[in-house]
Image 1 (cartoon, rainbow, N blue to C red):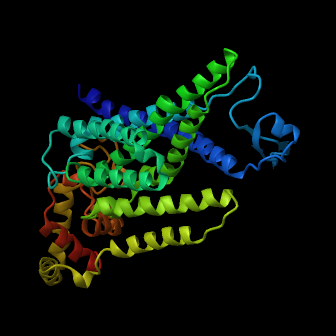
Image 2: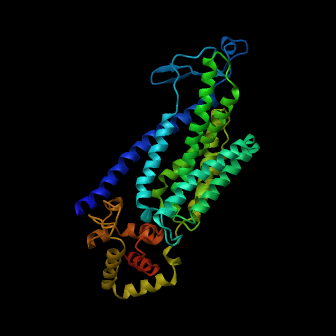
Image 3: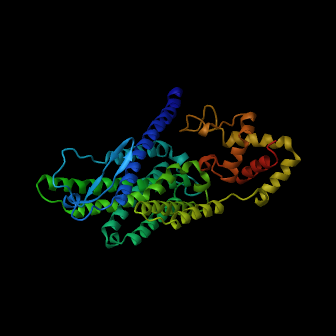
Length: 414
């Protein structure tokens, strides 16, 4: 029975690895296709009036060279005169990315909600409540976004973008008041990903099917379907950089552990939108350096704003702990080792005892003096500067204990 209890988290760790790998592969395929077709749309040039291409209904074309061959993509204003025998549909890249992403969310967060989603200093939720908040955010996010698209606001691109950005920032604010910062970030990303895949599933592909069906019946496709699909495709394009940041955000506790984590996320997402807009304009032949300049300026401002305070700016408690530690250096490490044993070793061990962990996070083990001293800088950064560890403060490390860790490190980790 004991072996079985150990194999469950180990098996989940392998499942996490395989599904994460699949998610990255399919995500690259989806986002790569999205980037390519937006680039293509922005880069094609209209044919000469009266030319054969213009008579065929081609709205634009371009020539490209890649992989030792020449390519000549053409886009029709509505549709070609005849339906081609083979027509490639770009849909499974999106569907598989979302399915693998939701599976990963379930494995990494929902199966271990108390450790990964609940922060009792934010809200004392049960695992079921935390998971419910996460899933509800995906449903509500898509519903509100879709209603906005169908409203008169959807016809005004700029103001629509402002309102949707405000929706995402509001979601981030709400989620950081219910879930741990890390889980809140991931669910904002999952909300964006759900909107993106629902655009493909609910609007883009059905619209394309109607166009193909009309041609198969010998009729002319209604261009409104293509217009709606293009609108949602452009929205997805602007979502990509924010969602890619969120996918890697779990590695950077300095962002999601900040007391205003929602505002940090809002600023980074805005920077991503400005940078993406630069590339979209550049593909149309307009080089507007002000957009990446604004994006980079925002990122620099965020980095400065969330920088941890220097040791001299620490609290009086930390100062007192430092004074006591310097007076008794021998007992200082003994106390640090006791803190590690009580607050950290349940996860950071060769055989973790904390439910849901099959191996030490990031491979960091803190079971003996050599391991603690070897990882002194990591302990200081994660437990003192960022307060990212223990995860969601699962083992209730106190501010006094963090101060003692700070005093030990700042006095040379002796």
